[in-house]
Image (tube, rainbow, N blue to C red):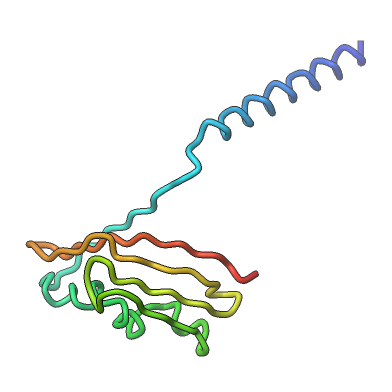
Length: 120
């Protein structure tokens, strides 16, 4: 009787595990993170600080985590095609960002693709 209970519990565990693995396997390997923020400031006042990647040093919280952060900039200074790459300590890691869409038309908008790898 105990053997039947243990076999039933093991079978239930296997079914749950297989179900979980199937769910995970069906998920896409790529994902997108999107954030939006509304501020009581005219979009034209904020746009230059988002659109020009070199200006991120003035406000990005990541800058304080590594005083020796190495940065490189490629492409145009601002707007679509501007690219920023960094390499830093284990808190910051390394990666790059590229502005793929940028416009100021009633709202501040910048679409940025990013790739990050931790140094840990």
